[in-house]
Length: 99
Image (cartoon, rainbow, N blue to C red; front, side, top):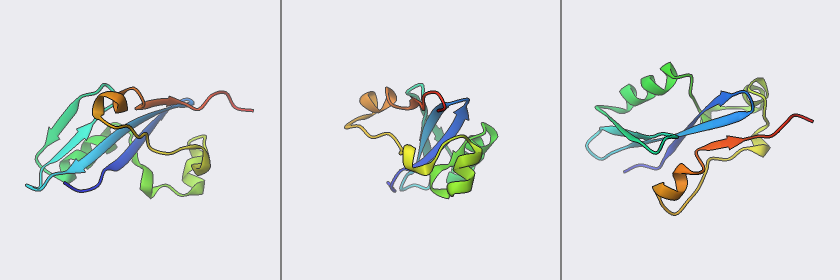
């Protein structure tokens, strides 16, 4: 299994995360903010699903992209946890009110 690729979508000041992993067989899985693991026949199919749902790849964002979405790269990092049960609780993050 490859490293996780993190994707995000913005709902106002709320960040919704999704984790994409490509499996050895070439199939892919997406762990979503509801705690579901969705299976796809390929990485391209999984990426297409995420793009259709208005997600963007976190590692593809630059400072200007982040500002357009209402945050800075310094204030945001993909969630981390010891397992998917704990991770599910961290897949939706509020950035709080703007100053």
